Structure formats: C-alpha cells, structure tokens
Image (cartoon, rainbow, N blue to C red; front, side):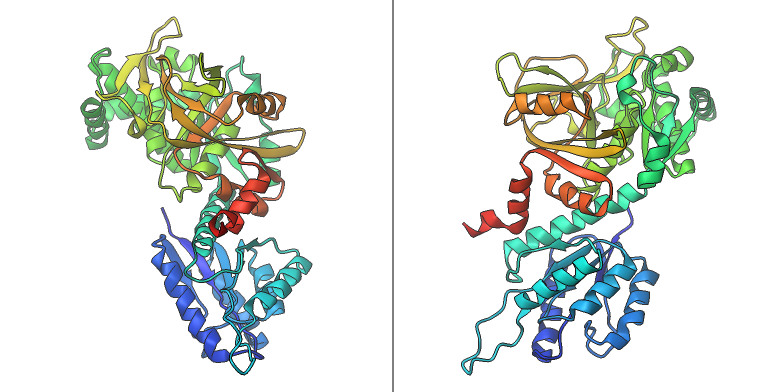
Length: 479
C-alpha cells in the first residue's frame, strides 16, 4: 500500500511570539512522528526561513508545494494565534481533508503577557474555513502529549484513508446479479456521477477462460496457492483437482482485478459458475479478501463499496468479512448470527484444528470450494453502505462475538446493544441483509470520513451520533 501523504502547515501570527511558534512547530512534528503511522509528511521547509504559514506572499508557493506532492490531507496546527485567511485559502485551493488543532496555551507570564493565544486563533480560523466552504476536522484544544490529541490525529488519518480509497473505488463486477436478488440492485450511473465510483463488468465466460488457462499453464504462482491451501486447510472432503481449480480461480480473479485497476470484486457466486467451472468461489473469495482485495457475494456492489471503506479505516491493516445477517440467537435477545456460505478470511478462523475446505451444503450440485468454520470474536464493527432514490448512507454499529450453536458455512454469533432497534433500522432501510464486519472500532473514522464525501450520510445505531462526537472531543478522557 502506498503511504498517505500529509501536508504539514503549522501557522503563526505576527502579533504573538515567533520563537514559541517555531518551537511548537518542531514539538508537534516530533509528536505525530512518534505515533508510528505510515505517513509521508510534506512540510513548508524552504518556502520561508521558518517553515511556517504566516506570510501572505507565500500563498502560491505553499499551494504548489502541496499540489505537486499530491497530498491526501492537510494539517494546520496553530503554533500561536495563526493566520486564519491564509489557512483557508491554502485549504480551499488544495481541496483535501483538513485537520485543525492547536496546543493548549500556557498561563500568562508574570508580567501578564501571553505568548500564543492559540485557542483564540482556532475560533477565528474555524469561522473563515466555513466562509470558504471548506469542511474540516477539529480536535479539542489540548496539550501535545494528551490522549485527546493522539486519538483525534490518528482518527483523522484513518478517515483520510477512507476518503482516499473511496474516491479511488473501482469494482470488478463478475457477471450480473442473481435473478432472485432484487435487494442488491444498484444504480451504476448514479454511483459514477455522485461519487466517481467506477464499475468494470466482465462475464463468467471471461472468468472461466482465465481460470482454465491458468490451470493449464501451471507455474509457480499456481503451485504456491495450491500448497498454501493444502498446508493451512483440511481438504480431505474434496479432491486434488478441486484444490487446483480453486487456486486457479483465485489467481484468475486477481489477475483481472489487477488488469482493470479494481480495488474490490463483486461476483455472481451461484449458480452458473458451478455449471461452467465446477466449483464454488467461496474459498477464492476468502483468500483474496485476506489479501486486501475484498470480494462480495451475489454481485453486491454496495457491499463491495462498504468493504473498501471499512478496510481503509484500519489503514488497510485488517481484513473484512462479508456476511448475511441471518437469525436471532436462541437464548440471547440481542444476539444475531453473521453467516455466509464459506467466504470469511482464513486468517480469522477460530478453529483449533485446520479450517475445512468442503462441498457446498445448500445447492443440489454440492460443488466444492467452501471454507467453513467459526471465526474469532472480540470487538467488531458492522457496516453497510447503501441507498435508493438518490440518497446514500452508511449504517454503523458495534458488536461483540459470543458463543452460539454450530452453523454450517462461515459464521460468528454476535451481541449488540439493542437488537430490535438494529432490526428496525435495517429493515426500514435503505439496507439489506448483507453487511461487512471487521475486528476493529472504525466507526469514528468512517463517521468523520463522511464529512468529506458529499452525498453520503453516516447512520450510526451504536454508538449514537452524539456519543461519537463526544468520543472525538475526548470527553471520556476528561472524566
């Protein structure tokens, strides 16, 4: 994954201490480097002798610096009061997510003089950014070493990554939706016009050709995937030729995704595919999802978009899993089963023994290719991007893995805060039974990312919007 590029534009104002502003420029830079994020920082060094944003004569040079570097976001730490109009002009011209924050001021000196008045300047800059119609993220005025600053900064970087990947979304659509699945209908033209999301459709015939050709040619890549499957899985219920075909299918899907620049895949996983290549794609989907190319079932384009966003919110460090929301727990009133036929990533397996490569248990042809078993629990985010009638939102909720009855397929039982509330929101829409899960709390990052994606509204069920905003302010850290 390429590094995120952050434009670092510390600002001061001439009426306050130049020396203190310069000192805090370096303190803040060292602090954000200590967070050990995979960032490339583009600063203002060389544009003026201080490397600070304060001289209006530098406006064009600063804009050029950030545009030429193609930064993904801008950070304007106020090292004293700051130059509010110049911050807004640079932010408007560059057009990327903006972070506004300043370190908490020290007490006045014994003679009554104040060196920075950072907080006062933040009020001014926030107003001018609004005048320029520049959306921005704000971290509560706090000390450099505070958890509030660290939390807010990292969350902003994660949100920036969501925005970056969302705006680059290109989905490989393998065949049409299954005819019975009206719930996954999407508006391809509207997704392109509204969000710039591109969809690259291919036929199952194209996939069949690539799969059989890879299988015929053989080679190191195919052998490597075959060996990985045989080493990591219990494949005793299928034949050697089935393992080979699954491996070839995985490589074919990845090859086409790379050729089309696709960042996710939505596939018609049943039932024509079984007729033409003789296998289910579930395990191939699982392996690709583990490799940060999420694959969604039943040609669910909106599900693929969800997966890209959720994955990006972890800075692409964790795999997603694509699940049906299916039945309620037989004993826990807030319990629910997350399930799909066999596509959850292998890295999430909770099985003590090797996960199983099996034949499909629902369809009459009983084609091989499913990866079955329970996945690990813990804290999970469940999300769903969806829309209709020209309006789009993303459902967000937190859950925790719990114990429950055995189920065929890939599965995990989870508990939520108020299942009837979840159910009402999911049924009344614009959502469906498909969701994306991830073992991380990505809700604040996605919530913040929506600020920079016009036409997409966050729709949190737990935590609530007020609770998310309080968390972002660091309210819980001040108790």
